[in-house]
Image 1 (tube, helix red, strand yellow):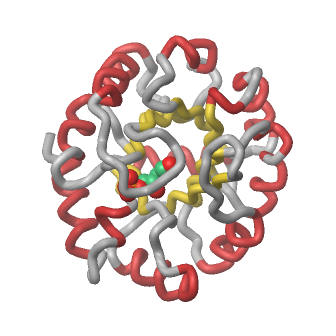
Image 2: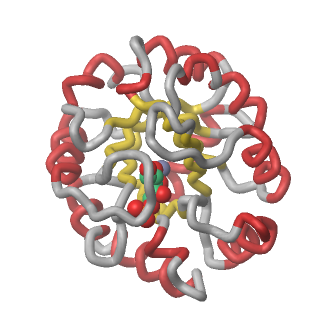
Length: 229
Ligand code: DX5
Ligand code: ZN
């Protein structure tokens, strides 16, 4: 499906809770995805780490391709890797619907966003808490989505950094309504309302979902909190 179609889907579903498949049971991916679908999830967030751009290593192309076979849900692929320009084609081929690169990981994020668009995949740009919005100003016209990290990229289970809220509000006032704002890191029932109030529409959640036996109640609670602002 096309970039335009996926973006329309994400906008239609927003506010949207995206489970981060970092803390799920990888020995039983098929049931994990089924349980998430039954919990009402409308898109999955895949965290790709290369042990170079971030001090952690997760999974890569074969797992994205395997997840693609297991679900029709849009795949939001968060590339925490150096030189993402070398890999976007492969991740698009593996089945990504949205590819988000880190501004800190590339000498010219704008060129990488353009490259992603040419693959007919939606393109996002992410910044870590320590990176100012100024670093992505040149990307505003090209990005379909801006991902504001509320923890330093690399690990699940970290605490939410309020600096993200300020950036989200500033961005929401600056960007056109078509650019989606996503927040990732330490999002849970205590922090999600403030993110929604600031203007975020996509909420990535790892530990606050996967630390529960049942996914349905927590996904509904978070969705409810995100919509009642
Ligand atoms: C961190 C990842 C996040 C992370 C979220 O680098 O990008 O997606 O898994 O996990 P929690 O919700 O536990 O912070
Ligand atoms: Zn992520």
